[in-house]
Image (tube, rainbow, N blue to C red; front, side):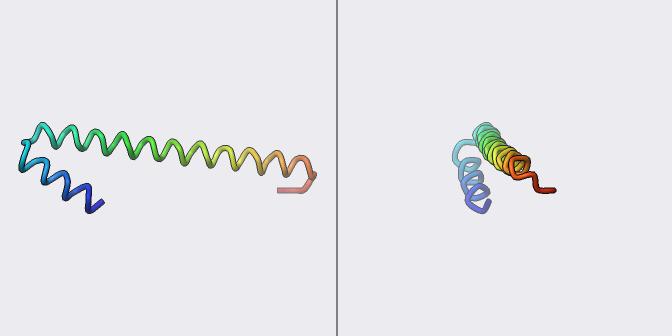
Length: 60
């Protein structure tokens, strides 16, 4: 997060506000992508454990 703020400020100083907006948009997009990836991984793990559970007839 510190790098983000530092880079964003550098950006603003050298390229004006327009650059800052693009930078923020990119950071948000990257964050959303990471969250989506985590969500997918979690869903796969959850699904796998549910199947494992059903297969072994354990109460989970």
